[in-house]
Each structure stands twice: as C-alpha cells, then as structure tokens.
Amino acid sequence: MSTASPASGSTPDSVRQLQDIADRIVAQAKPGEQIEAYVSRARETDIRIYEGEIEHFVSAQSEGVGVRIIRNGRTGTSYAGTLDVSALEEVLAEARENAELGSVDEWAGLAEPDGVPVVPQQLWNEQLEHFPTEEKIAIAKRLEKIALAADKRVRVEDASYSDVFAEEAFATTTGVRSGGRENGCYASVGTLADDGDETQTGFGFSVGKWPGEFDLDKAGREAAERATRLLGAVKPPSKRTTVVLDPYVTAQFLSIIGSTLNGESVIKGRSLFKDRLNETVASSMVTLIDDPTDSRAYTATDLDGEGLAARRNVLIEQGQLKKFVHSSYSARRAGTKSTGNATRGGLGGSPGVGCLALQLVPGTASQQQLIADIDDGVLIQMVQGLHSGVNSISGDFSTGASGLLIRNGATAEPVREFTIASTLQRMLQDIVAIGGDIDWLPMRASGVSLVIRDVTMSGA
View 1 (tube, rainbow, N blue to C red):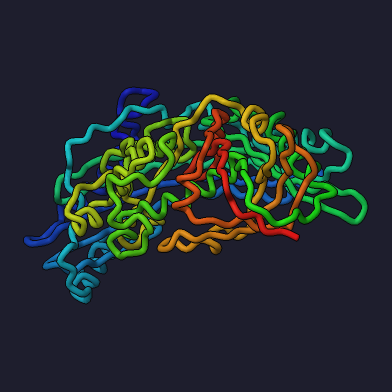
View 2 (view 1 turned 135 degrees about the horizontal axis):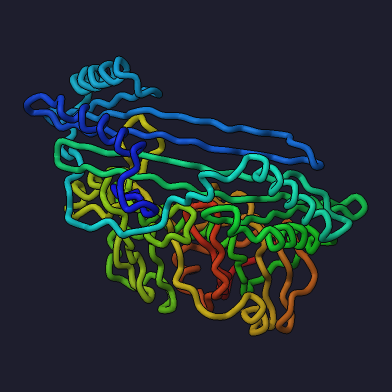
C-alpha cells in the first residue's frame, strides 16, 4: 500500500483520515519515547452456496488502531477496535503503562526509513469496489453449477466467493509515514465424487483483482477432475520414485521452505539453513523469490507490516542461498538490514517477520509435457498433514498423499493412502524440472508443477 492511489494519483480521503490519526498519536511522544501508530480499516465479504441456496453470508467491517511504545529498551503495546477519540487516548495511555511493566530488550526499536522506494502497483480496483452483492452471490451459484455439470458423479460440498478491502496508515517517531489501500477477491469450490461406497474430494480456485478476471469454467472443471480421477484409488507399492507435484502442492511446500528462510527462525537456531548463506542448497534451476511487488500475487502489497516499502527479494538464486527475510527487529539482532518483510497478524502486539509472496521462477513446460518425460513416477495431487510432518531444523518430512501413477509418459491408475518422505534439503537438490504452469492461489505462495527424483513412497 502506498501513499498514492493508483487510480487517482492522489491519496484517497479515507486513507488521509487514517494517516491524520496516526500522525496525531505520534505527535504526543514524550522525551525518550519511540512511538509507532498503526491505523487500519477493513471490509470483507464471505458467501457460501450449497445446493443453489445461500448457506452462509457475512459482510463485515472493522477499524482500529494499534500503538507500540518503546522506552529504555522496554516495549508496551495496546490496541482498540474503534477510532473514537476517547479510545485513542486510552490506547496511548495503556501502551505507556505496559512499557513500564515490560522487560528490557537490547534489540527493541522501531523501523526507520531506509530509502527504498515504493514500487507502484495497481492494488485497488474500483470495479471490485462497486461490484454488486447480488452478482457476488451469482458467481458462487454459477461456480457450483459448473462443477456439477462437469461430471454426474460429482456433488458440491460448497461454492464460495470472498473479497477483502483494506486501508491502513503508519506513523513513527523515527520518520516512517506511509499508508494506502488494496482489495482483491477469489472464488472457490469444494467437490465430492461418488462411485458406489467410495467418495473422493476435490477443489478449485480462481483469483482476481475483480470478478471479471475469474476463470470459473477452469475452477469448476478442475474441482470435478480432482475428485473423479481419484475414484478407484488403491494403495501403491512402496518404492523410491520420481514425483510430480501439482501446483497447489508445490505452493504448500514453498510455504514450509519460506518459514525456514525467516530471519527470526535463523537467529533462534530453528532453521535448517542456519549458517548456510552463499552455499548451494538447491538444484541450479531453482530460483526462489519473495515478490510482493508482483501484482499478480493474491498477497501483493507495497508496504510491509512496519510501513517500509515491500520489495522483491531473491532468496535462492540458481541453487545458491542468497538471503533470509527480516523485519527491522530481526535485522538488528542479525546485524543486517530489514528486507521489508515485517508481518502483522492484527492490531495488537509487535510485528513479526515472514515471506509475503513466494514464487519459483517458472520454466516453460506444461504439466503434461513434464509427465511425458517420466517413465515411472507419481503425480501428487493432494497432501495431508504437511505442516505437522516437517521438522524445520533437520528438514525431515513425511506426509500423506494421493494422486495418479505415471507410466510410460502418461498418468495411469489413481493411488491413495501412501506417504512421501525425504528431507527438504534433498528435495531441493533433487528438483529436475520446473513447470511453466504458474498458478496464483489465495495464499502467500504461488505454485507450479515440480518434478523431484528419488523420493520415498511408502504404501502397501
């Protein structure tokens, strides 16, 4: 989010109002105090359709302020879910009181302007802003119909439409002053496919800056296909094999890898990549970037959680580990600079740190072309319990999976109730092909098809 509205070239009145509030709070700093004010306003819509009827409808608005005060190495925070003048005074007073009670942290401090310019992006879509509610409902109903029409064995568990609008402003006594707004939306559908006593599940997504960018036909068709092609699945034999990760599964793995490149995890010794900067950690074809300035990403933004400019960070370049992501706090502890990766889970507390919009630099081949080069393998369509099955320190992982066997360059019979296991280090080194089928998903990582050799598949 930047101080300028991409649509109008000037700061909207609603953002300017938030900025004024943040400025007024910071102006009340006492000698020796550092103050950060974070002010936000949000609106979201969540619609769920079942059997052509509205099962769930929420249209919610929220606003509030979070204040952080640092004095003599002690941090105090407070927040309120309102922008009433009386509440602002109470929040400031409570943050001061909490600072007196806090423990001393030699690294405590606020972000400071670092001179990195904000990358102009089209983050606010006026068409979405004025999109009628009845048409949002119609989108979810249409998506349900598309999935049902794709195959007579398919039932729809739910079809949904979601959007979010957010405005925010930052001000600090250290000189950070920034704000802006963004919005986005997506549609999703969950499916069930029945064949006798057997039932399999599937899903489909479509992401856009406004609903006119949705490809509902693709989302509905994929949801049906993901469920129906697993019908009749059996447990495969155990062996070491080549796997092809579906883009959604790749995105899940990237999220895990991103958490190990978190500067805070590295400082605490909770990352398998600790002390490995500038070493080769992946196949030479792997370039992993965190790029919230790519407006195609659902989580694209132009400010991080401390009001600094978001930026494109190359984390792994042609297999070499180049960078960890940092907030200003983790950067101070590590003796480096913020990478613009502060994160906020809400108004309360201090910012954390994390990747904002991960993506692998894609190749050019389609998933079908990748599969055509494999004589014996398995297409992993879904995984279960991935996050709980990964050790971020050792890199060991084991996760349940389902998908399709690959035989002589084509997909064959469906398989389920097996596990795939390796280590994250080995997996990155054993990547042999990256697809060009980039899939933008409603999460902090995009996906592409990924071919990995020599993975242990444990089944029958």
